[in-house]
Length: 133
Image 1 (spheres, rainbow, N blue to C red):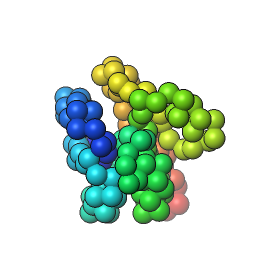
Image 2 (spheres, helix red, strand yellow):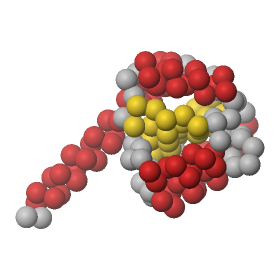
Image 3 (cartoon, rainbow, N blue to C red):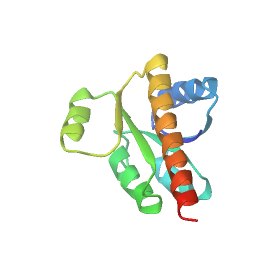
């Protein structure tokens, strides 16, 4: 899976990038959300993983801009602030929420689920396309 990773914290960014690489995913990592959004259209990402609390542009603003370019993008939000995550989930913000620090096995499980869902949709689209012929 091709993943865009955005986190302003250098340690979190390196750790998550290492975990994604160990899980055999292709990952582009950015510490600057503005730069990540600017480069997003240049690549075909299957998934975006973004921190919520970042200077200049928070993760929800980043997601909104990315969805303006690719409305079907899957987005995983990560944060070290549980209250903020709960508030956003209750408000109905789209996406998956993970609490920092993200455990390796938890990350693997979430990515496996996202990948399985993505493959299921591809299969459904293939069936629909062949039915229309």
